Structure formats: structure tokens, C-alpha cells
Length: 116
Ligand code: HEM
Image 1 (spheres, rainbow, N blue to C red):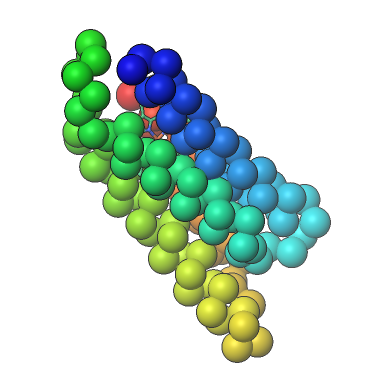
Image 2: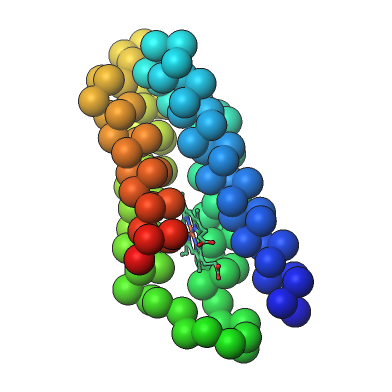
């Protein structure tokens, strides 16, 4: 059971890596736009994160305040990416500030996961 949970943690980290990696690629290319790869990473991190938030009966209490904040931040990131993608399809790209906010919120979620 512990190994299975560790595999889900690994999947969660892969989701984070895909989301943040895709964001860094766009930032480095100075495109400042949301991409489908960001959406994919967010989805993987969300599904694995929700699975990790379930009580697995293993030692260690879950910090539901922290998990709740992470969930809210994830929903905000998803909304920003979703709104940006639909605006881009209509020909009006997202403001650069929103792009930086997506990266900052992603890093914030990883930060509270590791530091709190
Ligand atoms: C963009 C969104 C997210 C990012 C970047 C992120 C990032 C991370 C990272 C880097 C860790 C590893 C921490 C460590 O091993 O010390 C982690 C762990 C964890 N995350 Fe997330 N996370 C996100 C969303 C979520 C969501 C939505 C949930 C649940 C609703 C969640 C639940 C958890 C849990 C329960 C752990 C602890 C795993 C363990 O027992 O070690 N995460 N997250």
C-alpha cells in the first residue's frame, strides 16, 4: 500500500513537472500563452493530488487546511488556463500578467507542499 501511494506521489510530481515545465518553455520562448501541455500537467497533478488527499490508512495525519488551499489554487490555475485558451482561440491572447500568475501559483502550490 505504501509503495502504491509512493507511485501516486510520483505521478503527482510528474503532473507538476509537466505543468511547470510547459510554463517555463513558454516563458523562455517569450510566448506567454497557455498550452495544452499545461492543461495535461494540471489534470495529472489534480487527479493524483485528490487520490493522495484520501485517507489511505497509513501513518501520518493529512493537513486538510494545506490540501484545501492547494485545491483552491489548482482550480484558479485551471480557470486562468481555460479562460486564456478560449480567448486565444478567439484571437485575443492572454495578458502577460495572467501568464506570470499561472507560473507563480504553480510554484506557490509546490512551495506550500514542500515547506508547510
Ligand atoms: C498545481 C497544483 C499542485 C502542485 C504544483 C503540487 C505540488 C506538490 C508537490 C511538489 C508535492 C511533494 C511534496 C513532498 O513530497 O514533500 C505534493 C504533495 C502532495 N500534494 Fe500536491 N500539488 C498540487 C495540487 C494538489 C492538489 C489539488 C491536491 C489535493 C487536493 C494535492 C495533494 C497533495 C498531497 C496530499 C501531497 C502529499 C503527498 C505525501 O504524502 O508526501 N496537491 N504536491
